[in-house]
Length: 264
Image 1 (cartoon, helix red, strand yellow):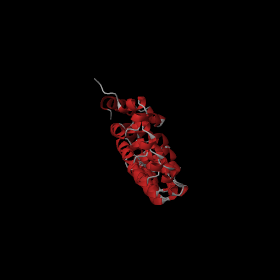
Image 2 (cartoon, one colour):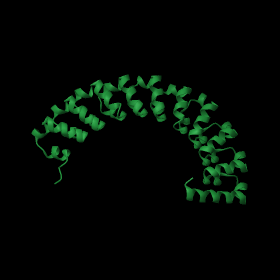
Image 3 (cartoon, helix red, strand yellow):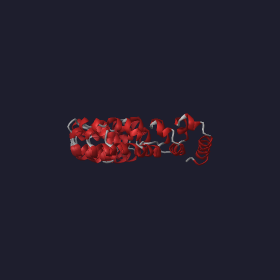
Image 4 (cartoon, one colour):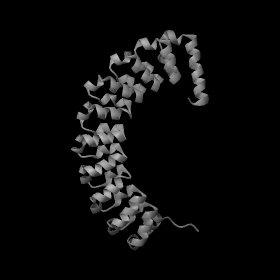
């Protein structure tokens, strides 16, 4: 005979069952979100709430308002699941210690930070170390901060679109972006599209970046074949002369067959 899940028993039960501390404690240890069905008194019971969030951090949303302002409790939750910060009291978004724990778990939690903390360099750098996309939620001044942008670009080269005009001219910044995301070649300044080393870095990451390279490289057999080896779709971005070249065409077919059989 199967045992009815705790959730169903609480849902179908009366107030007495939802106020039964022993039963609810047992329930949240099995399924944290059972806290939603507990009595308001038990939603304010620290031991029960701790047991619930240890099983499922999202159970925090069902805790009492008082516990949502409990710094130690919130720190415990966000260190496990940063996004749970959204359930905590608004004041927690201005608490530096709480936020640092949240972004160490999920850098994009910077999106929930107070305006002041979005302009805190240490906080922003830590967030970008965990997830480069965090730069999208930081103060605009950090788009000119080379260390922070290098950190963010290591995750996603397309974040190059967010750097300051000064950093957009910085070769190290451009190289970091291309090594991360070859197709970010689309966003570099014209002079970098003619830089052989940078173009090769982009192609090494994604052969399709050939479409954004200077014409001289799209007409260079060695470079085109390198790009095709990385991704056969690069063939369509080669100069017409090379597309009509039998050896280049045959090489492209070989690469397609190789990718179909080996996945590489």
